[in-house]
Structure formats: structure tokens, C-alpha cells
Amino acid sequence: MPEAPQRRTAPEALTSEQVARIAAAAADSKHGRDIVALEVRELTSIADAFIICTGRSNRQVMAIAEHIQVELKKQGIRPYFPVYVSALLEQILNFF
View 1 (cartoon, helix red, strand yellow):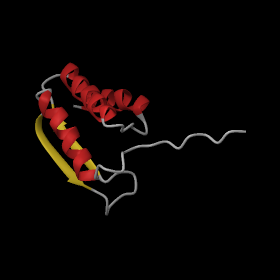
View 2 (view 1 turned 180 degrees about the horizontal axis):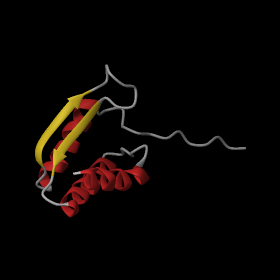
View 3 (view 1 turned 90 degrees about the horizontal axis):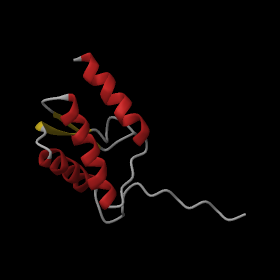
View 4 (view 1 turned 90 degrees about the vertical axis):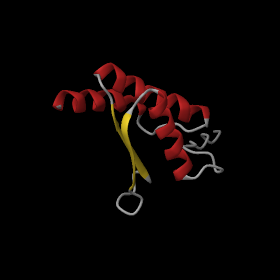
């Protein structure tokens, strides 16, 4: 039985800081506001950084999230949980 291919989440050449910068630039290109990168590698094992930003509408926030995924995919980076992003955003948006 052939071995399943290893899942790559980030190319070896990119650091977590570079990935965060790509994500922040993608958010900025969709007019995200108040963009902040939080380094959390010492606090959690699920991520090295969180990129947080705001948008003016639900539609814009969804466009920002989708554009970040597209830009990271161009670099060979796949999210661990892409299915949950829209559901999570929907709940966050409904909270505010």
C-alpha cells in the first residue's frame, strides 16, 4: 500500500513572520482596517501568529478572509481548517 503524501502547511523557505506579512498584506489589499499581527508561538501550539483586522461589512470581512487564503495558497500554504473559517466568521460577525 503506497504511503500517503505528507501534508505541507508552509514551504520551508518561508518563516512564520513572512507568512504573517503575506496574510497582512492580503488583508490590506482588500481594505482591511486596524490590521494587527500578534505573535503567539510562546502561548499556544496551534499557531505562531494571529492576524486580526476589521472590515466595514460582513461581505468585506468574508472577502478579506477568502483573499488571505488565496494569497497563502499561491505560496503553497494550505490552512488546517478551511471549512471552519466561514462558520467561525459568521459567528463572530453575529456577535457584534
